[in-house]
Length: 579
Image 1 (cartoon, one colour):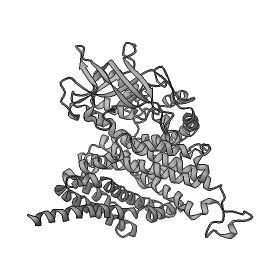
Image 2 (cartoon, rainbow, N blue to C red; image 1 turned 180 degrees about the vertical axis):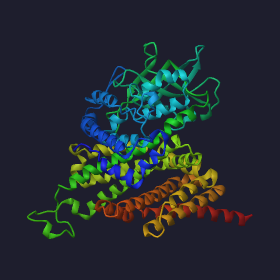
Image 3 (cartoon, helix red, strand yellow; image 1 turned 180 degrees about the horizontal axis):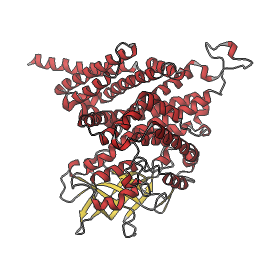
């Protein structure tokens, strides 16, 4: 079965849970983006994704990309589908009208890319960096560069890449060796190699715009010496630039997306932003990409869940414990959806999908608020949320995409391990999301070491207090969430104090701390969902699964971090006593 987006599920979360139409209409650019318009966009996006993108997913996986003497041929149907994507105006959904865009909210683009990833992750890797490249160039590019490239990127006429990784450096960008030499005409000549470049070469667009980290000759060592250059495949005069694809990787999954090793031999480019400030400019692109990777995780989990749920509703095996005999009729076996073990898997993944969606869509709304709200305090609150929550969502949603998809494969039994049902592809495709755009371990360190500890947990505390104020303590579920919010606030302070005695500790417990944060946020999300849909049977069942099978991890992770902090305190006391 092909993936089929369900706009009604998204509308419920946007409208009933997050009150997105009201919040968006309060922003000047979206004053006319009412609920009806949002619904129309979602319906059209669902139709396009379900009818055009999803059907070419399996062939894209089985045929894959072909490398031939420096050229890359994408799988059958990809070029036509991408052209339809551009013709439909989908790349430009949230880009500014003056740049050729539709000027719609970022939250609608977020939903679109979640669905695209669920339907065909390999295809979606091609346009997946457009939003980040557009934002990077719009904020940091010169007027000349913007005039030449911004609209082409915004509309998807030209695709873009993010060239960071080098073979010797991996995630350690401070070791980047690619060199850029300034020229008299204001350009730079770029020399070096990059690996793992998604869409570094392909046949989808006539030009590819590479945004590349490099080092000028007089730049200091380390990450502070990096600059950002724009290096096109085709130069403004129509000549081919000295940009070469040396090979494409043979990967575990994502066969429909070419992952390239790129070589730049005196390639012509232009600096984006100030020399030595390349990471600051690139982080605009990277942070946007991290939220979209979180949405990839949600979409992939939804794709796996859809397949497993449909299979469980038609496959019969044995008698289900507790099933009502009257419902069996003449059947000799019950649907596996009635078996408690299968029901647990399906309802648990559904709980993750709806809870994570609520948080991701709220984050996309916060991006809209941070960009367009005239109130400085609203802007500050939105920026604080995005800074803290983006690494949490990237890590937790991609972790669940892989592990949850594997659970969904389990529903099929042996049939899940063969290709005809398609769920094994989801498992393979999902695995890389835990690695790229910063491994999940790096996300956890970013959260705790760079976001929480520098201010002693004050920013995290402010976010948690804002969530607390949306809850009603007279409701048992809300009161429970408020208790967990308070525990997390105290935990942040506890780790900050322990880190003074043992600076290594935060790096050891960062993963556990991130899981505590995600589970707390999920608890908040489900409290809001339950208020909005108290009588919806499917959501009531998913809410119960969340409390029974997901939320108990909170106490375990909380205990791990607390015991680590207590160990530091005991060791410190022993040292003091021995003096």
